[in-house]
Length: 144
Image (tube, rainbow, N blue to C red; front, side):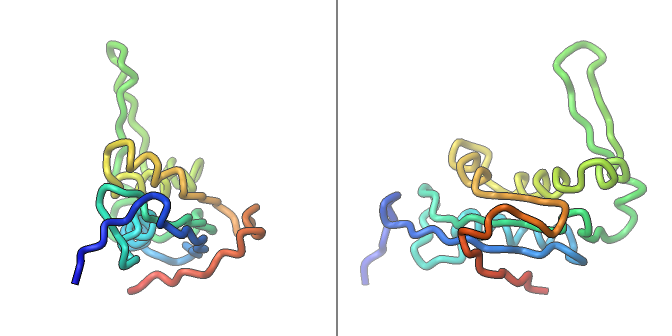
């Protein structure tokens, strides 16, 4: 039996719809990242973007376990002296819940141009509405 190495032209992309309501953030992120990479397909090749498009709705209703909401702090640096900015997870959830899901999924993708291409296939919305009905997305169930 031959090993198949997928080419960019061989990839058939599909659209999946994920409802994040009541789902644990880490579990949701890891499974969505696997679909974006294409690990669910038999033609998966690490150096080719074989993944599918993913639409995540109800990102504002995602669940976090433990004391993360009170304890976790996101930090970034502006590049200027004294430019360390901190934001608590509680503020993140209130102000931009879709960005929280996006950031979590992005951390699970490769840190290179291929990962950036995979990340562009992710669409996240904090409500139930999304403008991708024309693509006829299939529902994707998160495994427990």
